[in-house]
Picture 1 (cartoon, one colour):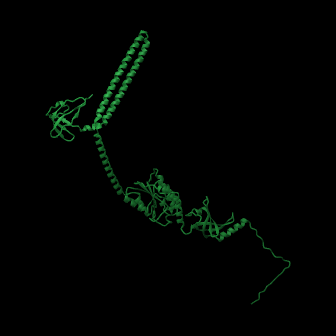
Picture 2 (picture 1 turned 90 degrees about the vertical axis):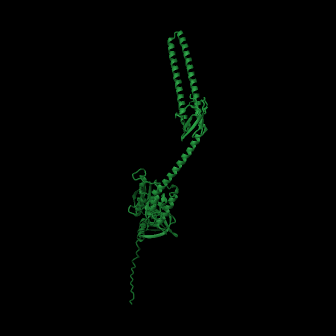
Picture 3 (picture 1 turned 135 degrees about the vertical axis):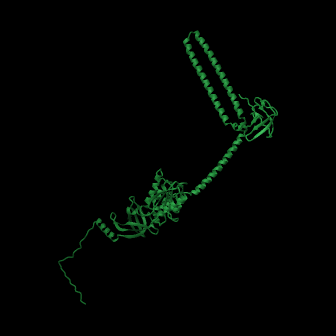
Length: 495
């Protein structure tokens, strides 16, 4: 093995060379370090607990990730933040993907996040629970704000995919239950990007048409078949939920299978487990309606019969009341009193007119004696005018009072039950078939035939008497085939 050879050179005149010194500016150094960080950590995943979460009005998210005693500042810009399916909150464990960089303004290490998801439960489930809790706190799930469904809708608006089996299931059920019901389809995506916006547009469209548009409906059905949580994500959209809550038309949510629940199910006025069940709930079967109408008609007939029977009994009780027997006599006395007052009024008017005439003659004589012809004519004209006015006024007053009396008498006679009671009187005929109006035409032993409301009665006269003033004219008769006596009739002197 060869020995290593060493060589040395020494120059007493030479001195050691100092390394060249490089001076960085702050911005230059920070920029250099940031470049090396971004090159060394262009795409990393970091997990930690959120703290100091601060969303900005610009839409950016600022937070810190903590792990033990260490922490890392994280910023997520608006374009990436709007794609999050949940809302970050302090204390939530998350997994963040992005690149490590340096914030030059403060010289701080930070991570620019491009993706974030919660640890454990999926982002969709967390977003679902967060939105559900927030809307429930606002009262959008309250039963008091639920609108009732119309009993007999004329047209139903369905928002779903026109190419799926859902619309066919709904149409088949509606055709079987009520074939005359109208259905208006609003085609919309039910999953994927843009589905929530189209579903929301459908709800708003039907509400706009409700004001009298050509496509007005009475109830809205949001329908979709079953699927995973990702497939049903459009029905968990906050914008769609608020549109359903603000709808003036009742909304039925028929999304997924019976075990699937979405935000629309909680906000809608009614949740149907399946789209077919929604078609059964939205309208009753025409057979059920016919049975209910028949039952209501039967109840109405019974109620009307009972009402008529009750009113008939009331009328019969009124007819039998003794106060109506005195009604005609009371009216006659009032007529007599009115005639007396009219006679006294006419006598008073004639007396006053005569006195006025005498005073006029005396005044004329006095004026003649004083040769005041012109004044006499003037006073004569005035007196004549006043006399005419008085006469006209008195006649008009008499005419008004007579008219009011006649109207009152007519009303009393119209309302008097005597008109109804009069229908019970009988017609009496003699042996020659002539109507008997005067007892003086009859003699003891004459045969009479009385025609009643139902059948006839034959009687024989035993005694007659002349009518008395303000009294009764009793007539006695022996029963023939009828076996009974004729009822006494009242005689009244007509004025």
